[in-house]
Length: 331
Image 1 (cartoon, rainbow, N blue to C red):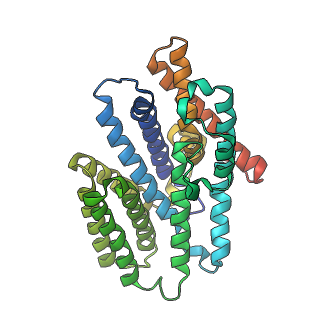
Image 2: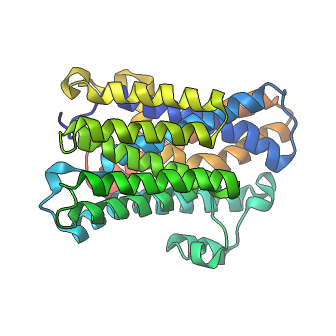
Image 3: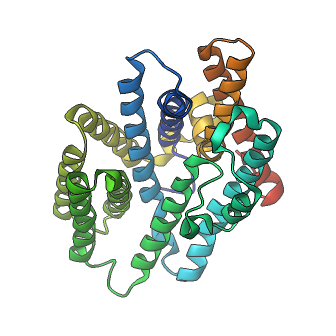
């Protein structure tokens, strides 16, 4: 496998999961925040979508966190490389969201933040200060950055990569914490479950490169499945497991089979830009939907237009990062 080449199947999954998350935010979360009543059938569907979308996003992130070919690179260089990948789009997105919130604050309501909170967000001081996010979706950036740093450090510790016991134990701790979190601290459960799924993605990368044996990986897989089943309703759990298996199957195929022009496939095109779209979609989408409702357009029109605006702004952000701000070629 060659991780430097795009696996179009995985990119398609990324695009699909990004749309799942957007649908949840533009339906259930919008309804909760702005007290807009939706048809009853929307709520369970959107709940399943976000559970699958976030869970599989975490798994894919874990898979790409560990890079066997960069083992000779120092911890600091690896961490700085991840920060350079994750932080600039985050910074650009909060600038765009904050400026647009000033121009259309009436359509955002209480989710608009002060200039001081905006400045705290630019350097992530909002987390220790608990002052809130410019956009509610941005918790994921911090979570993924922490998980990246965690696994980069682990992968550099002496003899850790050769220790199946160490990796299995580490994953077991995440899974046990997730189950305990579900039983006693349900509000924390999602974060711990997502951490276990990132860990599971790292395991799958190790297994793909024959760095751990089949028995170890099967044990970890069984533990992860048990954790998923215990952490959510059975309907949700089995759907998430099914999607995870589909993503695993796509990753196990030879990457070269999927080398195509990414723009030729709508889902893979969105998948390429999914991180940027995710960063910018939530509050801007709320502003668009509220604005459309204000002028008398139906909610469904506002939802569709919000998706178009979020994908468009995310694509612009993607282009700026790749072609202007970092000097890399987009595509």
